[in-house]
Length: 286
Image 1 (cartoon, rainbow, N blue to C red):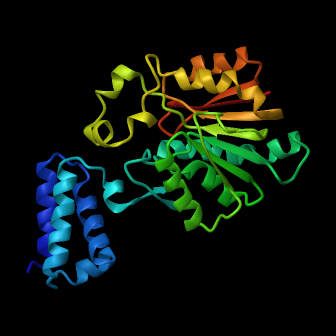
Image 2: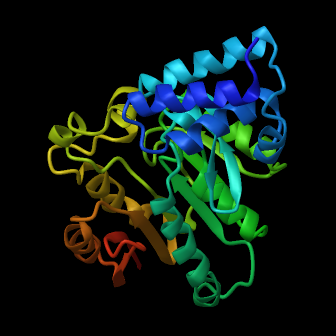
Image 3: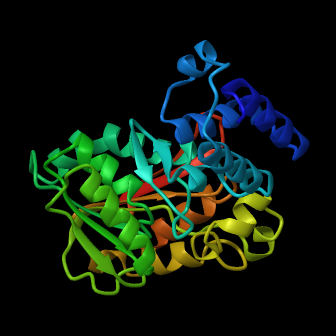
């Protein structure tokens, strides 16, 4: 049987050989998950032998990771905002870039409440919700939000439902449908991180994304704007008076999405950058 230190060394060697630049971090995270201990324990008990079953489990995970299977899918969760969300191959992995979208809505929340003449009962629709990380994070920060999560994928909604259960949110609605299909209410806020990568670009993405994350959540059509056009076109039917819409966008889509919003009658349209200085969010209201 191998020791903890030997397995850490094995993981490091295998991940480095596959070109993984985060090998030192990922080998320990995977072993922590298998052994259900923290990294300090592993450092202090490096000579401790690991059972044959646990050794095999760890080596199997390392083998899958060297084949570029995403770390978050191996673990079954991803960090987002102050929380962890269940994920699998049926949903896009939450990314730190998307946290900017949540932060901007948080910063705007009081103003939205004032604009709508209410301190609570804000209705929020998260379209293309995937794991539900955006809408659920906002619900956890603002418990008064009346949340609807919508996605065309039943499998994605199962993941979102597991995250609602994880955080004991019982009063959110789940809707299965393409964009506004099945949506009858009007909302103060619509938020969406839609598929926005150009079809030709999808095939050039890193293998973790290209081969394992759902293409349905990535491909935004020839110019990456298909979903923005469809969502904006019918937004007025599903927004309350002066209702807001917030989008995550690709780094080169700020002007195009802003123009689509303005053409549809949205005002106070703004583009916000992420921490890398790239355009990341566009929003406005009726």
